[in-house]
Image (tube, rainbow, N blue to C red; front, side, top):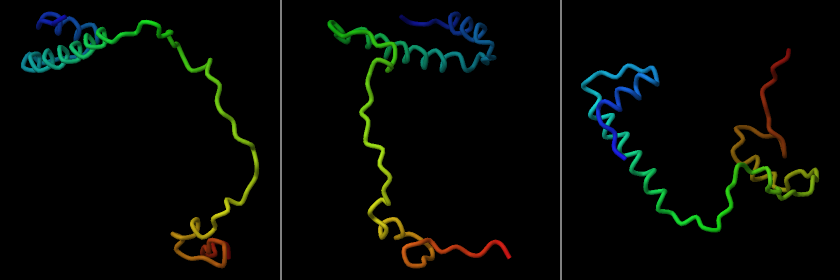
Length: 95
């Protein structure tokens, strides 16, 4: 499928966008390129592939909801500008 300049003007009018006449050839090439990629998708063999309308039928893997300290205080505090032991040190903000 290939779009001609009249089809580009019609699409622009339907989309309610103003396209200057000098931009129509560039837009025509861009849209024809996009349609070429879409036509390539028709060549994909999808026999036996069930349609998927969303991910709601898939089950998520759950992990145990366990509270931990992270187990790596040195890695967490490695980029801290200032620290006090195993804690971030911050300036006092309330007098």
